[in-house]
Amino acid sequence: MGSAADLTQAGHPPRQLRSMARMDVQDVPTSARKTGLVIDSQEVLLWTGSRGTIGVLIPLTASEDAEFLPALGKHMRRSEDLSALSGRDDLAKRSYHAPPPIESVVDGDLCERFSLLPQQKKGIIANLLGQSVEEIQRRVLAGFASSF
Image 1 (cartoon, rainbow, N blue to C red):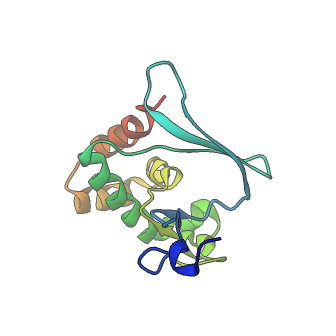
Image 2 (image 1 turned 30 degrees about the vertical axis):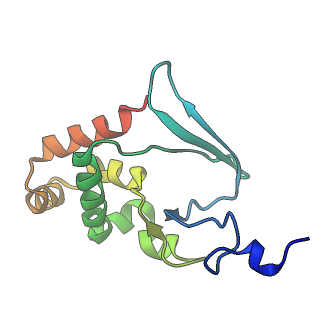
């Protein structure tokens, strides 16, 4: 049997997991599988939950998407119309169990709600992002559809 010093390296237990991303999915994940959703597509992490939830985690491989989608998500969270669409404040809902609610993850459902906002609010967010409303809607659809 090895000593306690043999079991640790630089003060950490061997094979310690490190949190790289976090998001409250509001369900208990029961299975996960790394797979391509169609032949020759990018691999995604497909997961299911105990309440019937089916979720997909899609890696952002394009640097433009990795900058644009988090910025859109930030502006969508700040939108006062968002709580009317979902019934609750997004961050309050997601941080109920453990803060921080979102870390290094883009909420695709939140970004897709851009098309449901009133035209005036879409215009404000588009100006903040320096793009047209049509370009934002095209990029949101293209960003998530690229894995299918």
